[in-house]
Length: 117
Image (cartoon, rainbow, N blue to C red):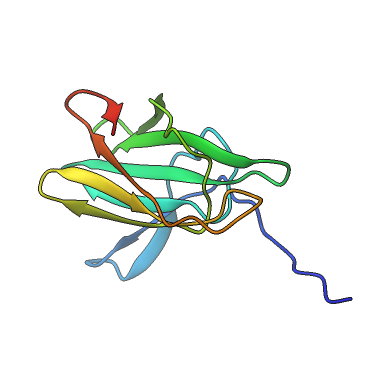
């Protein structure tokens, strides 16, 4: 039986193009693998993922101006290994896996309202 090893990470790194090197940032609140990530202005969003036990619907947002992660409203569906993109002022999280089946759904996040549709 082949076993897949999944690394759960809480660490975050940034690349400084001027110095040509990576450095550590504030760790995420929840260790996760397979999260969908997108940027909006000075924020980074980590959506869903897998924490080693359950598939996540939780979402956290990193504010680069204050170097801090906070939880925002969770998605309605647990999903990991999903695609995500910033489109027309919103974050779209596409597909993924919920622990039982592959998903063909999309959720859209409005950061002004802190709301998923």
